[in-house]
Image (tube, rainbow, N blue to C red; front, side, top):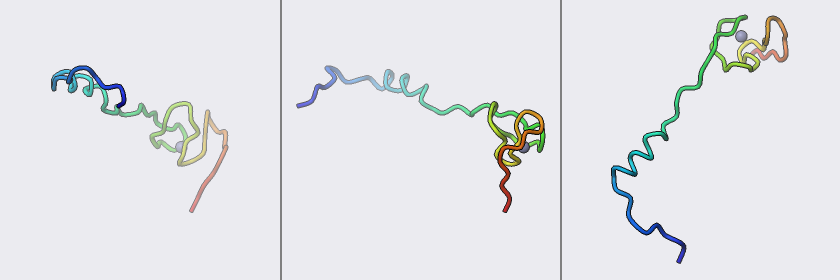
Length: 61
Ligand SMILES: [Zn+2]
């Protein structure tokens, strides 16, 4: 037998715990090169630019 909680958690307590489980939207900034939304402090996934005109990776179909 594994260790088990002594008492059942009430619906209210359970729901209060789960109230903070939802994922919040990641904050996005607009790329200064192409205008796409991207995560801050990352190379832009759509144009490969970072901090002005630093080309790190370019992917095109
Ligand atoms: Zn970009």
